[in-house]
Image (cartoon, rainbow, N blue to C red; front, side, top):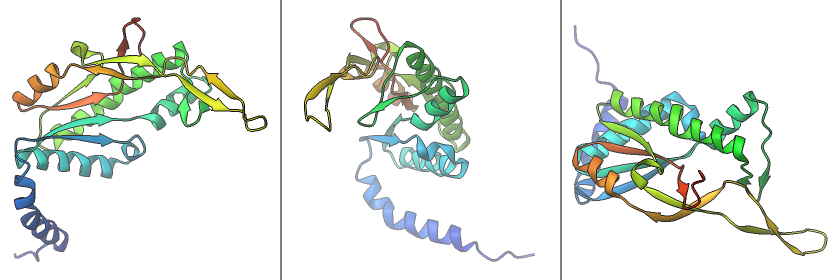
Length: 195
């Protein structure tokens, strides 16, 4: 019994054949890929993303995945009855919110993406900026203008941080072992707080 060729598979194969010389030009190079929170809610997109990461690895590119998770944090906060407040698109993060954010980002979401990559034939490890001193963060300081008076005011966003320094030793170690790092955006500050 013969089967007709799958047109979708033929199209993917033709695209890959055309792209391969360009992809191989980057063999041995590190690609940092941001995987956003909204894309993570769809299993088909997660599978496609994982397959793309495995493909990059297969052609010699060294992918490092840095992921978001805003919608998932929001859903968990809602489930726990913790209200979110945003200032200029940034979540105001009190101690309870920071604890939930770390649990969601460095826990369930990271492990889910690692599992998708593993199912697609790759090897991955979920880490956060807190692991092995990967990222040192500083508290974000922002100002906002009062719309009525145009007076600038300092806004305390709580435990929202931004990277101050990066020690990529753990990333290099994982890449050398053939493992795709999947990094959750959680870090520690010099003050010992999680951001």
